[in-house]
Image (tube, rainbow, N blue to C red; front, side, top):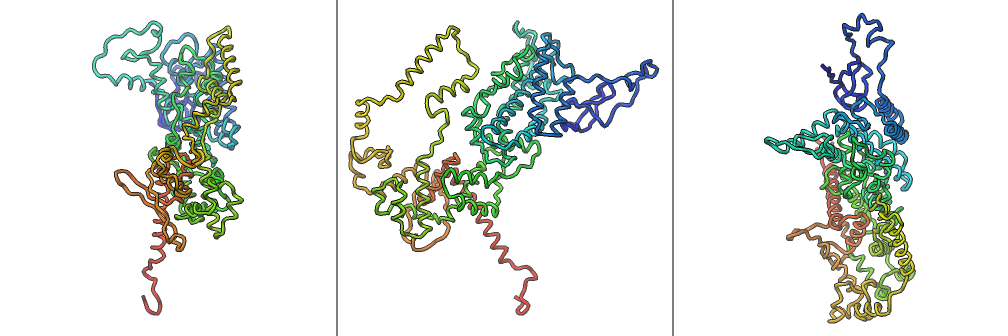
Length: 639
């Protein structure tokens, strides 16, 4: 009978050791040998044995090579996390030697043999599990390498990846001995009642099946992808960047993944190169095993990373507010040296808990609260509480200079105070950035980039079906034809049709900012023919606000005469939420929402939440300052 001891493993933290029959005990999960206790009992047949028995000091148990490698790797990871990549390479070299030599390890049972002769179901699930786990591990390694080399991320993330990945692997318990049986029993429990006889297909006859006649290989594979999805590699990559205090956001990870700059969709090619082709015990191709079927959403990526940190017991810090806020300010071309110090003071004073990662997928992203602090700071510093944008439209030369891009002329016509000048320049920059900013993926810039993207990512691993190069020659001819004619100007007839479509009026086009696509009717009925530039700009802004369920508040007549301080906006529910705001705030809000890649209403909700927290802090401070302690009385009047 196998003796079982309830002890914690020093390597993986598992509770439970089994007697190996040789005087030593081994972890039920990682099969590492216990170093602090042994079985001192001696068999009767070994007492008078000539060679001293199995407990003789002259005899030692021959440890399998694979177990020694795993134990050595774990000790190296604990000693120096910077050697993580070298350890992975050592593992891969050993697996290549095993496949080429045809000799596989016999113990521990977690790593099955890859010989042509398979005698038990253990060989199947062990090989499938080993190949999948190592493949995901290689995917994480490739992503960290790309982050360091292509995006200048600190090499510290390489050392952080190892322990996080091993802890996550230990938590999911896919390396446990009972994992395979539990998965098979779960697949059989879906149908109740008697099960009839089945006859497996001839080509799958040697493979294990469950009682329902289903193949066990895809069942084990689906269980692995469910417990350790391929998207966990992206979550771990983002998590280590977060721990290393890098200004890397989930939006960056998803974008680089879709562009193919971060190995994910086409990573199976490199994984197959390192692990070798599929074996008889694991007949699943690398494309089927390691190619994701869809991209992970931005919100799911952040919550997944927080979930991994929580289940493995990490105390995650808040996001690096200084780095992320300065990055957003630079993208908006706003003065960092003027806004960032004030924003950091607001952050340090309020310390909102929303800046910590949360595994709640329904919660607003952490970057929304970072931008909310920046918005509140900008409104305080530049006094954006309504009327500034309309003031900019009321300039005498605003109608001639529609876009307000002539900064020299714009500077000369300003006679207001310096604060008003800065606010008007800020609104000008925000409007320009909003119209210019287009988050276009690299593969969508031109046809050549898109075709290269399809070749490297979309259709990765697919080779030409024609060996005589007939298909390649046709592709080359079509490509040469495209290169010769891509710069040809459109015909005169096409130009005339575009002019007729635009109405042939000197009123302007939508690109000039003169009228939006919904204003074509004004060219015929003359409703807006005589309106000024200010009226036209306000009408276009109202139209944009109504699309996002915002309501325009005109500036007060006393806005420029009296200072009402910071204005807090609210929302009104009339069937759906309607937000009434000034133009200054809305222009700032939509630019920040665009740069943070969230909806304008979502961004506004984050600002309202943060403003509510600031109001609560103000009320608590005011209450504490005016509260008198029991012994806090005047010595003369006792009041």
